[in-house]
Image (cartoon, rainbow, N blue to C red; front, side, top):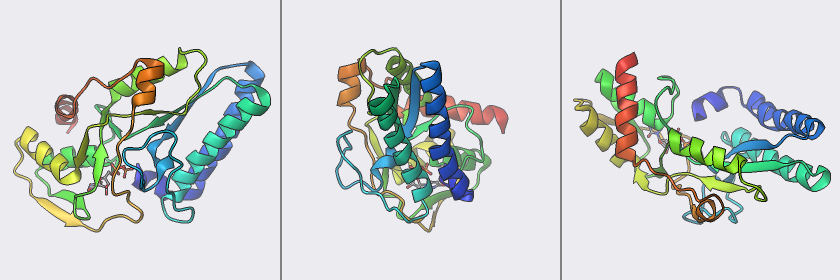
Length: 233
Ligand code: UDP
């Protein structure tokens, strides 16, 4: 979540880089297979659309998102170098925007924000024009992809795991208001710095190597997520 990882950016870098180093050392010693939960953030504000794994990205190295983006990019580098230099049995997945039940109501990301705001009858906060896009993956689809990746021999990635159906934030807000039957209104707030304008995974590689594709469309996933937030609010 951007507000959470930006709260203590130095700690975010330490977690990504030193955490990866420590875990790779452990995996090497124990001869364990190890999975890096990487991110679509490695593509930054992408100029190639949709994003295939072969795209190297468009990342600001000195901005407020860099602690996460560059931290995760460095972790991918470490994973590949431990494989090349030490034969560690690595796996790298790049996780695109994911949501579902049991998210923290204060997570700060868009799906949980909009649902919580709609259920409480508060204003729905759209950052920027709301014309930026994201592609939302339901958590169960991601977990299935992760398990397949860990159980597949001879393929270490990186591989995109995400739902390629793309929405604008305005469309998402509309959908949430309609599905919750809320009387909330949308309000516009400043766009966070370096907020990517568009994001959508190319998932052909995951299909080919893992026989994977997402099965839960946004409406179905939102239904389950809205039901969860209703039950806790
Ligand atoms: N966003 C928004 N309202 C919110 C929270 C987020 O309009 O209350 C926007 C945000 O600016 C971004 C998109 O929704 O363009 C997705 O943001 P999120 O923090 O969920 O994840 P990101 O993909 O940016 O890491």
